[in-house]
Image (cartoon, rainbow, N blue to C red; front, side, top):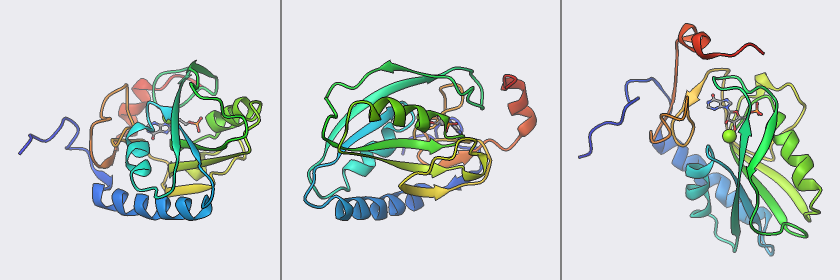
Length: 189
Ligand code: IMP
Ligand code: MG
């Protein structure tokens, strides 16, 4: 058996089995909603890559995939709100049914920015599936079309989500419980 990865001591918020079961439900709903179409899934790197890999393998209709990479200014645990694309799409989304795939919807700033940028490329439709939704933290009134789990305002890592680029390799979603530790890393808003 492999040794436990670093971070395995952190408390679990959502275990791998629960995540897997919920993604099966999301994939079934998406496959049903897009029946007769071929959705184009656009994963937001890096956080969404693990979720995207599991989600596409449970979708039963034809779909295509692409990725974009964004950078939010401000390291630490609070996004500064300024976003820029650091890796653009490879495939045109004009006329496509685009399903944006995110790890977590927090303040809504990233999604709001991507709605504007991707919307300008004339997709047939643009929807969002997010594994996690920290709804209480929303500062821009955007909603995801498909949500895996609504979670409280705690900082989570694992299953692709990072803290300082670490912990992405954890199979479960865990939280970093000490706000004092986090304060050391937070930049002023
Ligand atoms: P938003 O622009 O505030 O909605 O931020 C969304 C992005 O912030 C996510 O895609 C994550 O990269 C990051 N983020 C927000 N909350 C967390 C968290 O609890 N853990 C890890 N990353 C987070
Ligand atoms: Mg992200």
